[in-house]
Image (cartoon, rainbow, N blue to C red; front, side, top):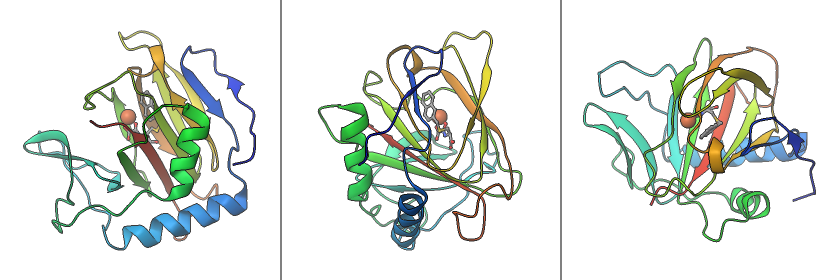
Length: 205
Ligand code: MD3
Ligand code: FE
């Protein structure tokens, strides 16, 4: 991947590369992910308390993040089809290598689809066995108002994540509280049918 500039976010461990992917690369990645997802359709998960997420989800890779009455976990199969998740596209594996330098590849890629008023409440990502491994997130399509604050609570700030932006969460930011306040509908044409696609690469095990 072409060299790209990292900006200072002011939050230690929160690294942001605005426009890391060209529009051409964004469209190619969206097409690749949508094709892979044909074999693992988006579904609407529910919280352990039974509340449906407004975000639709699927996964790529050996493991996928799922949520239902039994709780949050990683599993090898789609909860509705029972089939294995499709593989993570090579472009994403390269991006992980280039930007994180982590010695092992990601074993999970959560695919979040935001349409309409979909949002995601403040939470921490701690379902992974080793939370010292980074998380890498790729934003595609409509701009998101992303909120992030310290792990232990305290003031949060918002950052706009636009199509082609990539961010890595390492060190002190790895357990930061974060969420998506809202998505600016119609702000991008990159996702066919509209909306925002977020790809989150992780080490689950
Ligand atoms: C900060 N997804 O799937 S991506 C999630 O845009 C999630 O769909 C959001 O939060 C989305 O868990 C945010 C950016 C992101 C991803 C992982 C993080 C930020 C993070 C992990 C730790 C801290
Ligand atoms: Fe998260």
